Length: 326
Image (cartoon, rainbow, N blue to C red; front, side):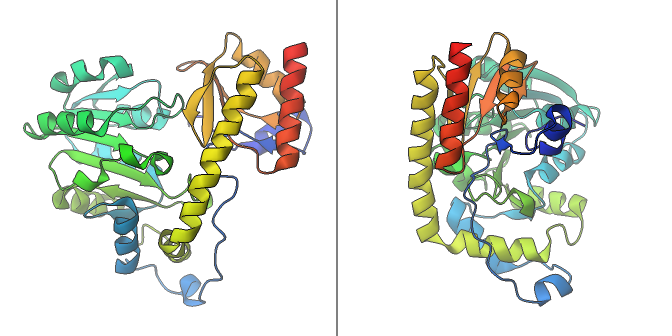
């Protein structure tokens, strides 16, 4: 199993402290306030709710969507829908994509973002994370759609992971997923701060969505998750306020890091930078109660999410100052 952020139990075991500030994920620290659920959300089998799909289509601007138990479920299932194929995955990016395709007999290779255009005509499947996790690199939607058209004409797929797309809506190609060959993944966990729901959506043509639904089986998304997500996706006032807050917090993080000599890239929800000795930085911050994300191989460096409150911002600034003065 691959390593991911959010592993505070591991941090506690390694460093023997409990007062962690978790900066190891890109999850909004001010998550949507889940409403009180109706009793039948817990009692009934979670049949598909067309109101949830309608709300998601309106929010993401997509013509059709399939709810899934987090985009991770779709990442693991999509490789099962194709015969062995030539698959190119953007790198560095969310490692589960490359891992999943490698498990099902596909010929997988990794390509830097600068090399993706050259990979389109030599791949049956191209997987792109946009904006990228962890580096924040982006690809213009016009370019993605051109790739999707080239691949779709010969039965190929362009899979675009937009898990962090809520803070950059102009990058999204979800509106075009009726086109054969274009598959888009969206996550409720990041922007809405509801990672524990395990809920995401897949946009694709009708045949692909049906095939994916058949693989995932019945009751793929829990009733409570559907109820909470429906409220969140309909709450446009909260969404506007959160978008503004995250843009401000992201700018503050860039400025704070720059003040300590760190030139970071990323999104409002996280920042990443190459670090010559990322293990040393990660360990230093951990001893100060800051749990950030260490990348030891692809994308070698550090990724840092957002503090939740002013006290955490001040603790982070103190730790960064100590690092600068070491």
